[in-house]
Image (cartoon, rainbow, N blue to C red; front, top):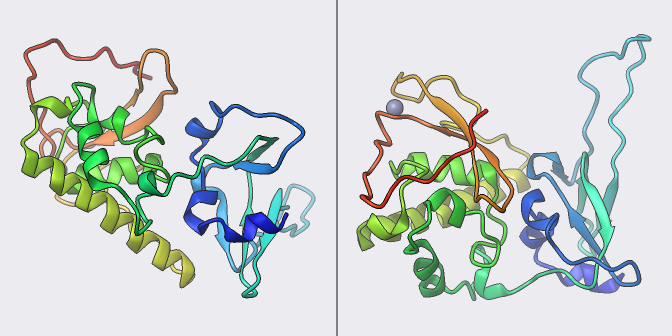
Amino acid sequence: MGRIYSWPLWQLAVPYDQARKSQCRKEKLLAGQVLLPSIRTNEFSRANRANKRGDWKDPVPRLVLHFENGGFLVFYNCQMQWCSSPVADPASDILSAEFHRGQALDALRAPSPVCYTLLDQRYFSGLGNIIKNEILYLAKIHPLTRGSVLAPSDLEHLLDCAIQFSSDWLQSKLRGEGLHLQIYHKERCPLGHAVMKATFGPLSGYKRLTWWCPQCQPAVLSGVGEPTPVTE
Ligand SMILES: [Zn+2]
């Protein structure tokens, strides 16, 4: 299991939708299928109320990874499978020094909705649903906007938002601090507008809940027909 220690911390947090599609085999190394909000760094989750019997029981972790520097990662509410090896291409890891910006921009420029592309772990390893929602709000881009209709400067800005938000989130987690979200699971955006919520995803792929503000993130007409979202 020594190899696990060399994995970049961020790459252990494989978004569930990507991980569930990974090719897994039982005979090889462990890899996580993890819902991002269920990770604790250097601390265990504690019970915040009593159960029906009146007992205060802390949540039971499903996986704990200890590192040589004394730090540890605790995973709750995750699925695990035996798998050939983790998908770990530093060029697609948004927090790696080797992250390939040009490759990411090429992917974003595709005619598919940007909210689909952002969750494509081939290009944005480590980018999960919370990050997707928050950065689209920060960049003022409607989730279903096709990348091909966005200006190069908009794509650059969206990518900057992805890297900055992810980096800030990681640092705040390492400090044990919470994250201030602007749109994810919100009923109103910070400017007070009513927020919309729907489930979006590729026809053949995994669908994820998406929040957006129709006023701060107006829809951009692509002229080639809007994608058909799956709505709750
Ligand atoms: Zn708004």
